[in-house]
Length: 238
Image (cartoon, rainbow, N blue to C red; front, top):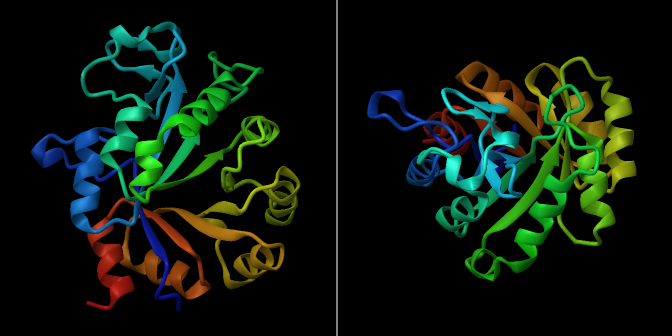
């Protein structure tokens, strides 16, 4: 069993009871307090080219993010630069949201270019000891990051319906350093195959003790979880 797996808070660590929403600065602050090594978050491009941190393409009660300007965003939806500031010293898993199945799909992958540009100029985050990995289900976004020449670690996100061997090959071809597998695809065999190809393995999204024990036994490098406190207890053995 892996006892050194890193813990990333899935969309931060929201808490409905205290009114902390997912993908908010408060959720990232809470994740740090709970002992997360890093956070996983989602970015989408606004109409005026800003990087909004939000999972869904539409902000409920406001509208589609790709049709909104920065000033239209509600207070709880942060920009990526502000999220990085709050996450200083942590690992930030930046998932680029740009899928061909969504109305906002941008074949030129401007979101990826904007992420690269921000990271190239965010000396404060890098200086804090923070680091990033850029991930996406869309290979085009990762190809855009690679073609930019930026030396950013990348991870290919994999859906449960994907063929694992093909996904590993795709991740290698894209120049990724990691592959992010869903819980159903994680086994000692799949982790071993990814490692043999030179890829680290992250798993999403772990929410209970039995699942966490199973993926740790399989040897994953990173656990993306909805329960940071539980992951910390099992990994640290306390």
